[in-house]
Length: 475
Ligand SMILES: [Zn+2]
Ligand SMILES: [Zn+2]
Ligand SMILES: [Zn+2]
Image 1 (cartoon, rainbow, N blue to C red):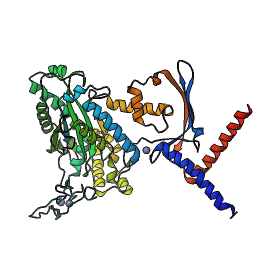
Image 2 (image 1 turned 120 degrees about the vertical axis):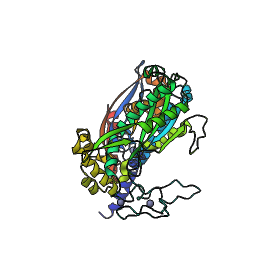
Image 3 (image 1 turned 30 degrees about the horizontal axis):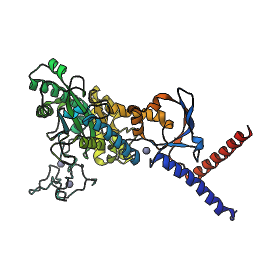
Image 4 (image 1 turned 90 degrees about the horizontal axis):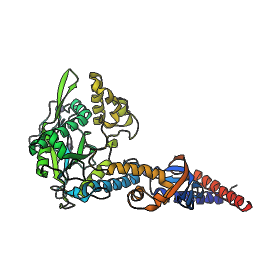
């Protein structure tokens, strides 16, 4: 036995490496690909001629590897990077024109706004370095202390990834109740803002709401990002379109200055009164910090402030889309049942206290009932990206392209990605119209095979190929 062992080990590694190199080629660095078995045949619809056949039987280990396609960088860096690329591509079309969006859309008044929550208490912070040096967190000459005796100043220069960033200077002073309530109601507060915005624009144009609706439409794409303090903020493209959407110019002669004034007005005035424990009512508002950047194709692509180029805005939005809440030690998937459960999971003390405050809101009013299903997102119930229907067709197109990508997977080159489908979909590629794909695919599992399994699978796939070749030669 000891004589055969090295040769055997060698063979196992050779077989496994065949499987692994092909799997790696197909899944291109995806950390958790999907394994499929099955086959498909592409037939020319007119002539019935077989254009292409493909079967997982032809792969070294008998599996076809498909990328997981996950949006979140913490789950799959490779697919997340690809998703970011797709999102950028499509958001750019929505902003600058391209694909199905006319280029005149870039001339519509548009602004890139960042809406934040108000302060719920001082937290440690990172400042973007100027002249290569991060500023001190909270330098105060008088070195004040809070009623609990904790310092309200901090002279450390926190890096962006310092775990202290976003943590309160005093957790007893921090208003966790207001934070939890604001987070839960943020989607409502957003809706109020959009209503106030339309009213203000109608007034600026000197027309009734009805006349305004007939002449223009406010469209937006909103991406949610969690700040280090665990509260969402919204990055939003707000644009004036014609009544039928991006293909038509807005009427009423409103300029980007009118639009930005109206946004500021709406952000200052939108509010909502909500119940909190102790029979009290809390008035929720947007934070005073409102960043607005005019979107124009004339802007430099690398501007850090001032006017922003559409492609740059698309890049910001795409980047925020791949972030999520895992920085707070919260599970990427699955439910959290309580603050205690979060603590057990390894959530930061700040996140645990926030979930506890959310838990205390649940019993006080029916409106908070479903909050208990949202502890894993720190009480936020919105989507990572939302858009008004008129914004553009592109994000829907991305989703349907992804769906079609899955359906047409076998019709494409084995290393295809979703952008190939986009081109298949929207370019005048007549092969898709004239061919029919007949295929059947079964789910075989997740992830790459370990060495022993890969070697076994490769060996069986080889034997099966030999058997099929034998059968073919005898018939
Ligand atoms: Zn992946
Ligand atoms: Zn600090
Ligand atoms: Zn305190």
